[in-house]
Image (cartoon, rainbow, N blue to C red; front, top):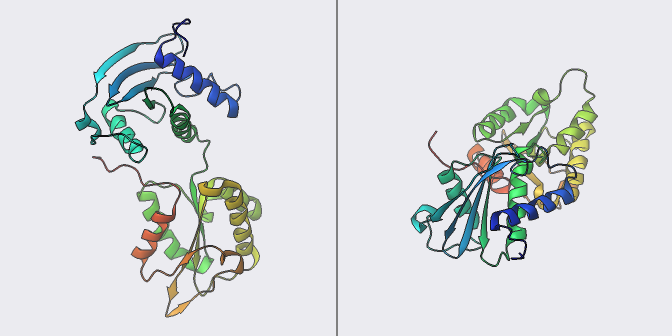
Length: 273
């Protein structure tokens, strides 16, 4: 950061974030959170500079204020490091009452972690703008649908967005096209393998689409295969899914636990309703 230009610390960070966003989303300045207008609060905690950008969508009016030294009791830790920085961010979000469109940068004084922080903030903003595929696709045989609806209801109660064919596709949508769109919007596919689940027709298509999404999205997409007991019998894992890990839970509760552990997204913070 050049002293000759007399650019403030927060303005420098925001300018770098604008450049970072522009590399992936051109012409995004008018609507992108924080970039399109913000107020700023800036403080320190341990050896880190804390910058809170509050989204306003007003590029004309802008305020900047200092919050001084943030106590370690507020962040719940006597240190900040790579292992707990996101937990610290969550505590700060509660303190500042941050919304999904706001941003908190936790920066080392030499700004050596600026790129990592911009990654975190952009990922949050992509989600708030609906640019991140975050649904969970439930693959199953029609005869098992009553049980799958129970899983869907629990996952929705936990805050997840679930793709289930009977809800996600309106009348007249071609099935295969609807399935393809469902996988594009998803970050995980759960295959409920019962004795009735056969690798044929559209179920085979779902397996193919899921593997294609896994190859494309990598760690941002999970393939979760659950072999379910039904009347003392178990289904056969499709050949294409066998290279991936699968589980054989004994109960629905174990199944739910395996799902939550394997997802690339997490349940929201535990906090008062």
